[in-house]
Image: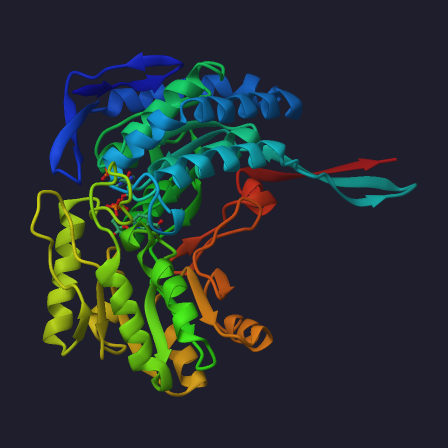
Length: 473
Ligand code: NDP
């Protein structure tokens, strides 16, 4: 059984008790982690606070260099990190459309390298004989990073690397379902970065709350559910701590009647089912025009029946299990409600009879807005295919949802599709794609999907405050 320690001030730290980490492909414990407590929070925040003055004074070049070394350490340990990601999340090493732990670790390297190279510009507002006014970006101090279980390593990187690049120090708390790849990453980073610059505590959500509500924390980066995001904002409000919140999504994808069904179906299937639907910006409400509804349903059902579901460690697996039993129960409950609402199951609908938390890839036709499977985010391998006849009406229906993370239009008429995509109420809109993220393009939600953006210069700026400097001549 592998044991993983916390890291505070560059040192491995143990607690007096541990908790188990389960491999969802077997439902068996494969690792144990430390159950952190309030005293570990105090130690970690004070280590990060003490490290901040020196770290924030390092030059851009020094921080760039060190972050490239961190990227190199991830790369050098890629096979081990991939295995840890697969064992804790269940996702395949390769996966449907290449979405698996290889992409998660590879993406972590790419994001680190790209973000290391970003440079915060100085904005000169005025420079004449009277005065020079410039706007500088300064690091905030200690950043708290709270991460979920669906992309544990990648999302930790998304929080931590821009925070460090901008000159902040960090205290992290990963999801209790999936802490191990993040712990291994911090161990590697601790061998490169000065003590106290990166710290990690494991333990329950309440430990996360102690970090986000701590008066010495200047910024919270959170990815996870909308209810927890709201609790975090409440805990941060006492100190007016800034928050970036990347929360749940229930993204609509609208297929216009001009598509080639056979060509589009595999792309739509991958957009819905990659990572088993456990991605914030996966396509979760699929609107198909009535003229192509039955044909599209048949194509998607065929793909669902043939996709290879299994243990992510086995070669050729395209979809793994649902990450945890509670989430599996949510998926089963939504499938049951879809059945009760008159949904027509084109594929799947039930748990797979084997060890682990497996669920059949499920596509349900004949539901509409107002049914639970359409209105609620399932975060698992089940997708409603919804019929529409009028484009203006379907845009309005897509926007009626309380979430606003992503959305997509699928069409052979790119101009028309781009114009329609801009009418979707969401932070990211795609044409003929969905959930495609990259390190230089900002990503974030509106409405109940959160606030603030990540990635690129826009994302980096969120880890800074503005200081306006006026020099009178
Ligand atoms: P949660 O929001 O419950 O947990 C996310 C992280 O927050 C975990 O590290 C958790 O710790 C921590 N946490 C829990 N309570 C607190 C608190 N009061 N203060 C600070 N930190 C806290 O999400 P889950 O991981 O359970 O996922 C549930 C739902 O979230 C999914 O069904 C999905 O809808 C949504 N989700 C959205 C994601 C996105 O990218 N937008 C990603 C993942 C999930 P611990 O694990 O110890 O409880």
